[in-house]
Image (cartoon, rainbow, N blue to C red; front, side):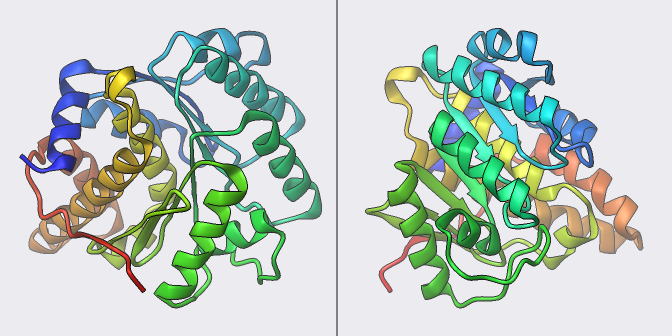
Length: 271
């Protein structure tokens, strides 16, 4: 059994409880994709309870999208509570460069929480690095694979964590190693929140591991590969059904629950 399939099997056997502070645009879909894949979601945002709940879960996923002051306080409480309890934290700094206020708050939270995995796209990674880059919303700015891998490496070194940089080809880096995850489908762009769902799945793959065997790098690569395989299967079934974006969205949940084996399409980046 390959690494990704083994991690998926462990996750489905352990049914990890994943605490998510979600983007308002994707909260229900984040919860449902976790349920479909085999995890147990809990979405608690209030600062008064977020830390306690995160500490009692197997993983925490903190999505910075649609921020306001109260949400940011909840993210900080959840992140600190999880880290104090040894619970792995995945951060998704959605739209990090959208405004000066959001960038300032994002950098403050990342510095305070020190997540184990950061999932972002290329333009968000540039914002986290303080490098020049045009803001492209939550979609990744265009760049070649070599440039994107170098960007992921710099971010991983700066934040001392694994960086999953998503795009047409996902790049996973821990500052020393890089892997490229190929495959997937452009149809992911038809559905709001597919990136948020990948962050949640990354948390689920992390939470499914035994603490003493936890490998952030492998879990992030496995989650990315699994999600690309879900997209491929869902789009193929959508085309066969003559459907569109709505059918594709539903098929994504079906795929997340049915896939057990897939072509992982992961390779070391040596460029």
